[in-house]
Length: 327
Ligand SMILES: NC(=O)c1ccc[n+]([C@@H]2O[C@H](COP(=O)([O-])OP(=O)(O)OC[C@H]3O[C@@H](n4cnc5c(N)ncnc54)[C@H](OP(=O)(O)O)[C@@H]3O)[C@@H](O)[C@H]2O)c1
Image 1 (cartoon, rainbow, N blue to C red):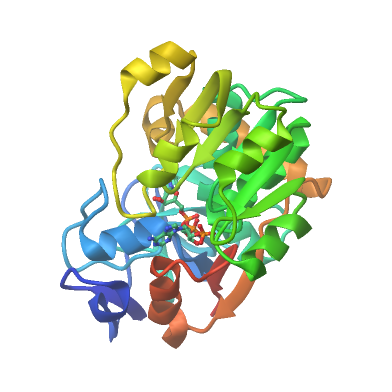
Image 2: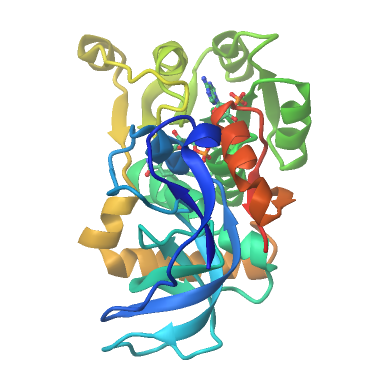
């Protein structure tokens, strides 16, 4: 089959090569799927660079989430048959940026019929991360103020939709006017273009000086440091990622003095330590998708030969929503 492969670590555009490789074969409790869609995620970028917490053996095919049609089934598989339309996380080295991919049944779910292939492929990592972050880790409540950084990005667009669903007031921070329009259209009540405005001032103004109750931070570094200046009494800062490239340190004396919580979020760990909660989350997300409360924002559909370019643009911070490989 044709597949993108990373054989040497580098920036995505230099690291990824389109090559012919052997088809994957399913092991026990595994499925081979024909890839129907697979979005670029920041972890794909970090894996190309060798900077992700998961360091797959080289060579590997990136594409950490996908929607596919089951074409082969391994031993000890129940609940799936050939022809099922499913979504889940690609088992490396056979990720989603290829004609075929490998899935583990433990992290494979039915794709909701209300979403097309590209949308369904994007309902997994970003939305599950938002769901666990906002509900389980930060306990976001109706009427609270939620500040979302990188609000027009993959996880950010999901966080806006999930925050609005809870009944929170959402302030989105984005880099640029095109992204601001995207965040506004998705339902953010207030949008801050970080190139033009200081989000700390806007949050203070919008909350009468109180600050944001929950801060969803996939950017880190200076963005985190500035966030501590506008977090509310008993607020929660969710440490979601470090897309800005710097891993911050926390001043715990500041957290003590201001009574806020710094809340870590590693969604992937729930797959290992609480798989039942991941299945519950998927059911809830499908219900939300069925009633139109959430809908992944697919901004571009890429052919196979365009995938490395799309992953590089994600790395460069110029994409909105999800750019998705659709064969
Ligand atoms: N904790 C978890 O379990 C978990 C799960 C999934 C993803 N993540 C993390 O969530 C983050 C976002 O992932 P994503 O796939 O949804 O990406 P994304 O948000 O679509 O893209 C990253 C965004 O970060 C912002 N950004 C700020 N400084 C940047 C810089 N120097 N370079 C690149 N981007 C920069 C840009 O938005 P603006 O220009 O609008 O600021 C950019 O669009 C990543 O750090 C990822 O690792 C964490």
